[in-house]
Image (cartoon, rainbow, N blue to C red; front, side, top):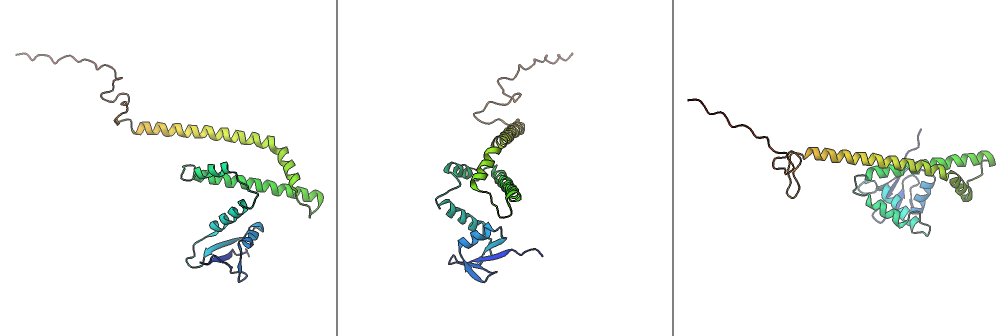
Length: 203
């Protein structure tokens, strides 16, 4: 039987109540659940609104303010600029996939270390840094190819959108803009062919 999601209720006094242990817990306790990969959900005790993301963001904020931040100001600024952007959903998925790939790679390295040094061995920070330095050129090449492909796809998409927009409004003339080719009154339009006058009717 699959483990049920651990339900945590948040009360108006900002206290968190763990329904599994029937006790109040702190934000540090929730962080431990995250580190243990436990499944949980935080809801508002009154409305039932899901507050899990809010609590996780609060944990991240405390970690960032703890003296060893993970995100630079430039990175955070770039992330803020994506809100409201057409690429917002794609960027979220991109970050999620890359973090998952990084986590999977770290787990595989941990398994390799345990197979060599025993079950109790762990990946030290120095060993992890050496691994990343070794993999750096390959990862950089792969990322460079990915970015180049993404740039080409974005350029093609932009060109297609521009073409569709031109076709959509080709029959309209806007004030302050030159008329499209072939539009009546277009200065670039070729000379109108003269037609012979109709013949004089015979009497």
